[in-house]
Length: 585
Image (cartoon, rainbow, N blue to C red; front, side, top):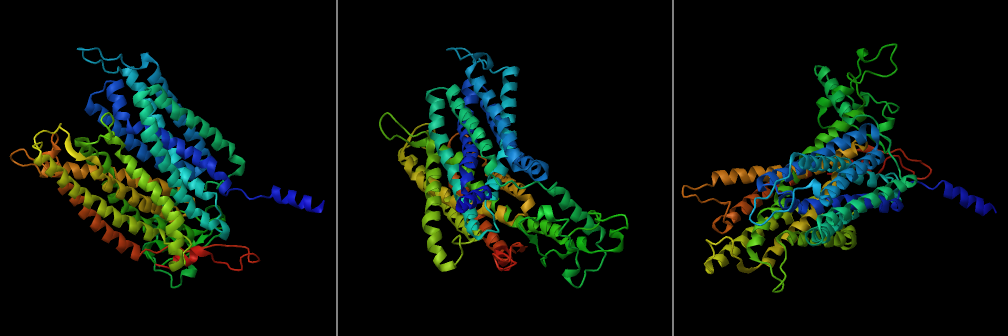
């Protein structure tokens, strides 16, 4: 009887979080990606064929939607970290996203919400103002919803593992691998099954299936509430960062203290933003340390706490330092995404000109070539987790095989070869076109199999498995604990910046490579007469420079030093693994 009571008591005290929460969290992310990618992949077809938009207007709608959806994660992260918390931000954002998807589905089903079908010999009637309003509102709702889901799901999932618990610590880095695996698997289903339903069954079901899946995921996510570890929001992180800057500026003329131990520390004040541990003082960016120098003016008899616009704790100063140190590493990811997005633009245009027939009656859609990227990415994630990590662990002694900085370096190196090979494949494609007299016939199929492009797609997928997951790990691990949603949002911001960088690069090359005879490296109408290989090799050169830049930044990067307070009876040590990371370069 005593054993039963003990077991019952132990069950009641079961710690929250852990692997048991993963199905509820992954379900939400999988369904969000299923809906976003399934719609975005074929969105240009929906806008031009169903709403009869002109191509340029449809393209602008697509890019505006993509840009907005990439920026809203910053807003969602701010709300989550400041006052709402990650669980409620994800829940409310999912409902908003669901409303947008239902609205899109209804507009695809009801004939009155879209223009009538085109009649033979007649000009197609474009969608009217009311029909476009429904479209834009629906897209805005989905963009806002994505902004709350994207930055918070990955941080919320990682929160389920207690970093001060040695048994759970290894689960954190595994989480990032399987998070990205689930995301990639859902994208693979989206670009195959969902797109097939949209093209062959109808847009009602093509949008309805992701909507139904999203509704189920919301119920599942909320159902898991009793199991989650919920980290309480600790106020606006941006306010704290500004306060440190203002305090340091006000005290810019003060002499630096001789001993860092004299800088202001207040564990009670920082309790809500240092649950996992207190950030220790670092030697970099000493000018910011002046925000923590104590002066008689910082306190009055009536004040128990300092004016944070004049005096800040070492922990708060180190929060700002951590973010500033992360900046150069974060920026190195932009060029990678610039290279990656070419698969959906010029690589797709290459595929369109090549022989894509598997049989006489079936050919691979050019847009489905991304299947090779996703498949290779998923295979690499499994290989990395099951083979690479255990193998490297024998040599490095590091639990995750190699550090996330080494992981990113490997990915950057592989990405260089992806664009390098793409240039040579373009030369081969044009040589075949010339040999068969098709150089001046852009709409003719060149007798070369599209599978010649598979190596560049596969290498991009392998590179992404290394870099993107390593990038996410880095942002989550090195960000201050109260800013992890914001740090995850910066990952999506890097993707957005990569897209804009690609646009800038294409625009500049198109402008400056224009010849007097009308020739161009990136021609609008005939890729066979262009110099696309030069464009790929420019990106390759930029990636080589970026790799050198990254290695330099990684060499001198200082890991955040974190002092973790643990129970001496259980752990026997006061300083956790994070402090060891802080001394290792």
